[in-house]
Image (cartoon, rainbow, N blue to C red; front, side):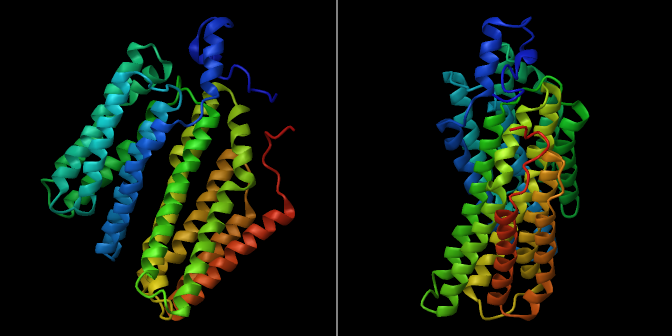
Length: 399
């Protein structure tokens, strides 16, 4: 058994060592993702698809910026609940009822998301505020049950509520004031854990790694949906069939980059750290550095529809930035994730990110099919290098 695998939450419980408290902490650290969390994540599948709808309706730099702001809001809502459930299983009836109500509120917010900067700004803001209020109520239940993770997270309550309140206020302000309030809300949300700190937060390594892997799968699933949507009206054309094949293999390359050797080392990395450092590592590597990974897939999904549907023509500049830039962002996000997680510079992913970026001007000049072929080549080279070299997992790997 590896160092740090036994009693990883003992000091968090402060029970004086040994006995039932240590055993309960050890059991909590071995938690895996349950069906309730999977059910809960269904609304975020829809919310992420709605981010794509918003950007498709406004193909412009402003539309991309609004898409990033809404993606950040959806992401942080998901992160808050992921931290909440990473130790406590919320098996009680009151907990489950609140989680179901949070799902309903998030679904309302997702329906209004494509017009969150327009006619449905207030609906989105109020629904999103309800999601956070329910989150705070769940934290209060944890505190009543003497769950350390709930007590530690309660220090975040001001940042949890100020951000959504600003989104409600934004509904009564015109552009650009509305966008500025959204930016302020994002800054408050994302800076909360840094300003408040992570002391007292519990982290179940297997749960955190598994849950964030599933959100990557959700994002990749959205990309696959967009590939199919782009092909459905012209599947009889050979160029479209080839484009579908290339696009699916690109998505497979992104999957391989994330779920290859890196992920097996990620859980060992979390287990090999002390409680305080483990919480900081989980915050940085997962809550923060997984957002560029998800954003990269969302941007790729945004324009892969167009690349498949009209594969014989070059892409407009913004579409080229989304398609090739999304793949580049994913690989570069993977570099940042691996650096924070393992203190390794993943040169293969860095070169893959640069290679995908170079294809942006190519996409403007050459047919979209050529751009897809170039992106697939980048993915194949990165995967082939990793299969050939079998890179080390990280300094914590002592096996």
